[in-house]
Length: 183
Image 1 (cartoon, rainbow, N blue to C red):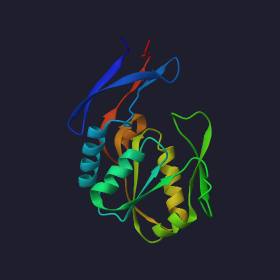
Image 2: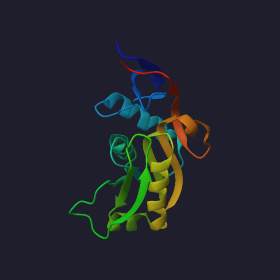
Image 3: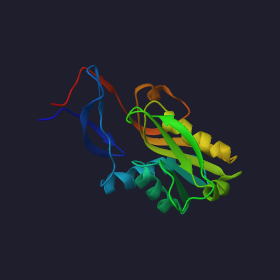
């Protein structure tokens, strides 16, 4: 049996499999894809915890269901900071980021027309898990390029050093595990 981390998120019990990052460290893998019940509950609880906003911006990809559900529940629009430019994107604006779960540097980009809608507006940045905060910082930099006003940064979970941050809203925490490996 694989090692797991049991926890309650937005009132729902979940078992997260432990995944090794290195010989010394493992993380509890949290993926909301397909977990509609958790996505709805987490969106509801995060909406209640953040100030009023005009738009949601989220990095691609695991947090997209959360951003969608928060947009659905509030009637607000959301934008995805993409990892690769798409043919339909115009006047693409980009920043670079290094994430704990991604090998190497990646680029996040926003369509210029979408970005212009953020100008002077209240923006909520949403992610599934905040660890190092690098993806969050990249999305903030994208919003800043369009003079958007970030009113809050929110995630379902915070892990590692992010647990100590006071500038993010999150529903729960997960530790980084030392010398724990899934078989």
